Length: 165
Image (cartoon, rainbow, N blue to C red; front, side, top):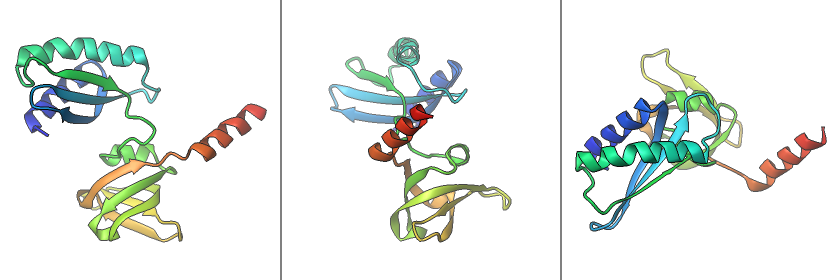
């Protein structure tokens, strides 16, 4: 990803009061697709109106910048249920949830429970627990990818049980 483009989009999204969770560039050279994933700062779910507002504000700014050419497609959406965990704040926010983490120190990809973050050494360290109950401490700089895991059956069951109460 072009760092200048990501910085530009991040600044524009943040000026609207949202956080940029992820920016992906796909499509073709002639018709690039910019996939912008946003999140609300108040913790509420991102709505269609939020996406429309960001899209309408971002498009003319991208056009004026000349960073993506003329024939691009802009898609603005929520980060989804399997959103990435990109920083210490994400790890704190999603404590207790399940994530798939790719890190060399874990020996590859591992499904874990997010336990928290330790900042006491000056470097953020993600704390996670594997399925055997073993706690792992992984430097944020060692994590190549981390995404929340969504299980359809357990989420539906939890929602149904909540409605019965």
